[in-house]
Length: 119
Image (cartoon, rainbow, N blue to C red; front, side, top):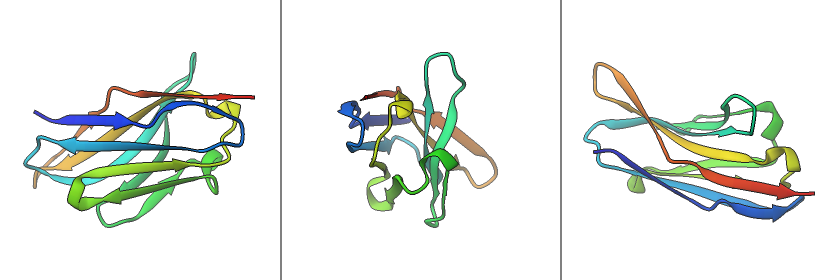
């Protein structure tokens, strides 16, 4: 059974930093990509950043230059370093892991961690 354990959310003042982590376990498939999404109240879930197993990254325009995604393949863990946080970054942040079985892809979501940025 696949498990994604997220940590690192919390309350921070504008301009501050937080680091999220997400550790994946329980699958015999290879990880193809890991990423972070967020959902603010009344809004749709959106991509924040994603990193492929090869190390390629992609960021939402709104976080470029402030957030950095990284991964530890040995630990099946993905991190999101968030700097210069803004009140509009307030949301529930969800980890997503995509596995490749050799013939198909399957994705899983974490339970979410709250990030609140006060002005």
